Image 1: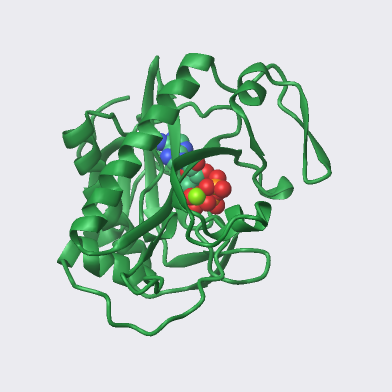
Image 2: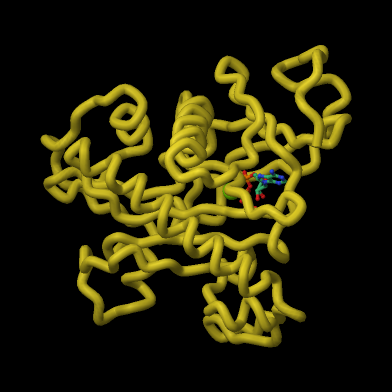
Amino acid sequence: MQEAKERVIQNGIPTGAYLIKKGKTKDVYHLPYDNIFLKFKDNITVGDDGIEDPGGNKAGGTKQNLGRQSLELTKYYFNLISQKLNIPTHMIGVDISENTMEVAPIRTFGNGLEWICRAKAEGSYLKRNKDVKKGTPLNYLVEVSLKDDYHGDPIFDKKAFVCGGKHVWQGKEIDLGDGVISSQQYDLCYAYTNLITRLIAEDFKRKDLDFIDIKYEFGMIGNMVVLIDEISAGSMRVFDKNGVKLEKEDIYEAVINGKKFGNTKNLDSGMSL
Ligand SMILES: Nc1ncnc2c1ncn2[C@@H]1O[C@H](COP(=O)(O)OP(=O)(O)OP(=O)(O)O)[C@@H](O)[C@H]1O
Ligand SMILES: [Mg+2]
């Protein structure tokens, strides 16, 4: 990894950068000196039912300024996390006017893991646990899923991810090979997930808002576990004190501009994180 150098920029993308992935919410470029360049887009993710969903596996429509807002929130949270918790992130530089972020290249755990943390029961947790009532406190429960859109992001326990082997998720067999993460790396990502979520939840509590759940990704730089990807309104679910779900732009307004929420009318979230 090298620090950013002077370079010619066209349409926000440095010369010599080449596209390696067109993601649902970001385009990913490889820079000539090996760093990675993320261009945040205005896409929203939806579930199979087409309803907006932070854990959704499809892009479904756009929202004006969502890319810039997601980038601003990511910058805010990554700075907060590295300053308050001393947890390293992949962020190197941000250009808000171009919706871009330069990041360090990382190694993923297998094809990638998602770390979900739940303060209260919502979304896919309720679908999988039919006896649990909506809103039941879950005390920052951590669930870990494999980034595998085709199999619906299967959730397994530590032993499965560390030891590997074949495991069944919703009737389909998934082969985790020799395992995708070490026991120590798993414990560290788990602890980071818990710490970061408590920090973010406290931030919302001070704003009189009710944090519900969130997801993160981690990767490796050398031997170091780092927080990667993004933390934006699309990563989380937040309700106001009346139990009304905040829209993405409302989360942005609350966190970045300190706007107050709490007098809106009730809407069903329909999300399945
Ligand atoms: N530092 C990094 N180095 C390499 N890849 C990264 C880094 N940070 C994030 N990524 C990957 O870049 C992609 C970002 O694009 P986006 O989030 O839009 O993808 P996606 O369509 O949501 O797919 P995914 O399900 O993989 O997240 C993700 O696959 C993410 O894991
Ligand atoms: Mg993504």
